[in-house]
Amino acid sequence: MFHIVANCSSVGSSRLRRRRRLAWLAQAQTDARRGEFVDPRDGVISLKDYISTHWWPTQSGDPSTIERIEQRVRRHIVPHLGALPLNAIGSEVLRHWKKRLEKDLGPMSIRLVWATLSSVLQAAVEDRRLGRNPCRSSTVRPPAAAPGRVEAWSPEQVLAVREALPDRYRLLLVIGAGLGLRQGEALGLSADDVDFEKEVVHVRRQVKMVRAKLCFALPKGRKVRDVPLLASVARAIRQHMEQFAPVPVTLPWDDPTPAETPVEAKHRRPRTYSLLATGRERKAINRNYFNSYVWKPALAEAGVIAPLDEGSGDGARVWEPSREHGFHALRHFYASEELEAGESVVSLARWLGHSDPGFTLRKYSHFLPRAGARGSAAIDAIFA
Image (cartoon, rainbow, N blue to C red; front, side):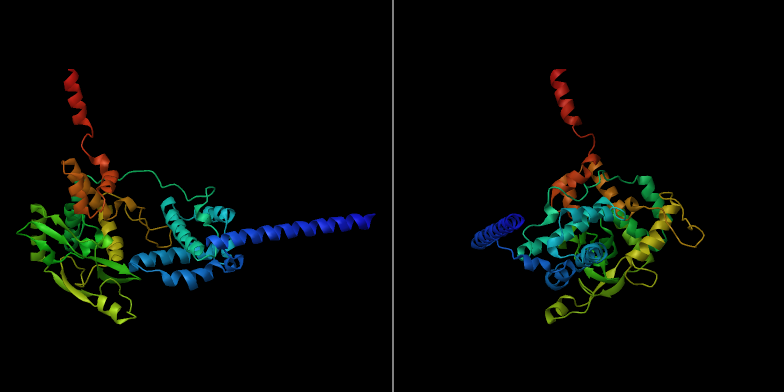
C-alpha cells in the first residue's frame, strides 16, 4: 500500500513539473513573438561585471559628470551589490541597500546614487538580461527630496565677507553677487568678456575640475549667455585690473585627460584666456584650495560661520558644516535682489542661465515682493 501511495505522489509531482515547464515554454514563446523574451541565463552575470564590460564603456557626456557617476558606482554601488547576479537584485535587496546608504548619505545624495543604479538596471532590461527594473518597483523607492527653500544672504553679510577676503579675491565676490555667476564661471571670466561700452558681460566659459586637474569648458548646460553689467560691478572690475592685471592662462578645453583620437585631440587642444582673477602664483584658481583656505576663513571672520575648530586634540582642522554658505550663496543673493526690485522672472532666468523660467520661479518665488498684494488691493477697491 505504501509503495502505491509513494508512486502516485511521485507521478503527481512529475506531472506538476511538466505542466510548469510547458507553461514556461508557452510564455517564453509568446514573449519571443512579442520580442520580449528574456533568457534567465543572461541575468546570471554579476552587477560588477555587467557594469565594467557592458554598461560603463557606453557612457559618454560631460567629463566632470562622468567622473561623478563613476564615483557613485565605485563608492556606493559596487561594494554592496557588485557581487550579486543581475537577476538576484530585487525589492528586498534594494531595501537593505537603501538602509545601508542612509547611514552615510543624505536624502539628495541617495537619490543620485539610486538614479545611477536605476540607469544601469534599465540598460540591462533593454539588453534583455532582466525582465524589469527593480528600482522602479512600487514597494521600494529612494527617499523623498528634503523639503526646504533657498535662503539669501543679507547685504550686510555680503559686504562683511567681501571685507574679510584678501584683496586678490574680492572681485570674485562682486562677480558672484553682482552678476549671479556660478563659481566656475567667475573663475573663468576673462577681461575680453567684459564690454564696458555696451554694459554687458559675456559668460562664455568656466574653469572646472576633472580628476583633480583644471580645464576650461562651456558654462553649465553648455550655454553661453549675456548678463547686464552694473555700474558698481564695472567700477570694481576696473579697480581690480589696475591692482591685479589680467593674466593669460592656458588650460586644456573640456577634458584634461590625454586624447585617444585626433578628433578628441583637436577638441581638447589648450586655449588661452586673460583671466581677471588668478591665484598668488598667477595661475587659474583651484576651487578646492579657494573654498578651504580663502572662502571659509572669510566666512568665519565675517561671523557667517563659527571659527575654526581645531578638532579633538589630533590637530585636525574642522570647519562648521556650511553647505548653504558656499560660493553659490552669492548667486542666490543676486536672484533675491533682482526679484525684490521687481525684475521679471523671464529676464532673471536668462541671466542665470536657466533654460526654463518655471524652474527659476519655483526656486526663487518666495523672493517676489508680497506676491498677490496688487491683486488683493484691486479686489478691495472694487468692494470699497
